[in-house]
Image (cartoon, rainbow, N blue to C red; front, side):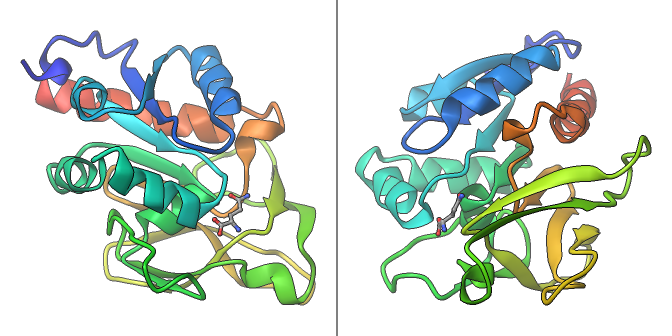
Length: 213
Ligand code: GLN
């Protein structure tokens, strides 16, 4: 049975891809937003969730593990079918339709029509924090923590740019996007205690569950 048919839209089941990366931080943030987070490592677990978070970590390692755990094709299929997803940092890289500066054997999921450059800020500085305006979040800027982060170099039609770097050598670089039910950020809202990005995503999931149900 499709889990989304039996889900209470107020408390959707949101999987966190638990192959590598900062899984616990996303689980905690989702819990605090009123979702029901579950770990996803197997195809049967993926089949049972309403939505999926792809955490930060190392995109080439997660890519390899997606193949080893036989999740790559099932995940592509669920994204094609409209499953909501949110990727932070390495998760953004995995959701791209094209990735620059990665390993030739790295796989991606084409959840968003975008070209992402991996480790893009690295030539200037590995990790940094800044405050940025995030479209749709009204209560002031979001503290964005970038850790060997990617940026988005191209977006296709239908992709909404939600945030860019406000100043400095990377000013104007695109660091948050949305296409349909799929959201991605270059940075890690799960580490700051500011729940607004996760709340936005859980709101997208609730809307998607209500549409189906
Ligand atoms: N640089 C990492 C990668 O290529 C992403 C870093 C992160 O998720 N914090 O996957």
